[in-house]
Length: 267
Image (cartoon, rainbow, N blue to C red; front, side, top):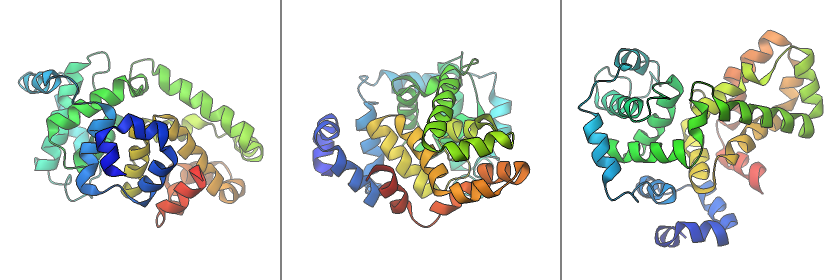
């Protein structure tokens, strides 16, 4: 399958989507993932112009540099590749965040971006390749609206999530309303970081595989899958422990098995 994906990723999505999902669930070969993400996102279809612009941006100064450097240590501080101040991982992360803050000055800098860029860096992409994929994620995949000053897309996706939650899990939705818990207290962080701030990284990368291949509707599907697998716990909790669980504990159910999640989500 992966050879066919490399030859024509769009055709595989159109004609073999179920098989593609199954293979993503089993695991994308780590040696191919970075290349596959670039193919699906078409990040290389720019005649090298975007890479050249990235290198030019690195020579400029961003007004957000102090804030970016301050936040770097808070982004996966325990991960070996990113924990060292001024180490290779933090430098790559800084370069891509800084360049994007200059590339799209309306967005500038938002800490949630660091989590998405971190996932790109973990794929052993060069920093200029990670920048190009980020530009595509923000543009053609529609993530930019999560980070603009008005956060239009984020509000839209939060509204969609709340409606779907009410339709599919009315008892859970009613319980949350009675406890005074609304999606802005927990789901906004899920969507801004694509779950990377707490979810096990192996699962985050798999969700990102699906986002890159299919689109951002996968994010809402995953959010609903989290609710489904944790209904009993959610219904047993009152306000404070419920918010704490939704923010920090809800991902534990998938800590050992991403396949269980993927089977529920798609099959």
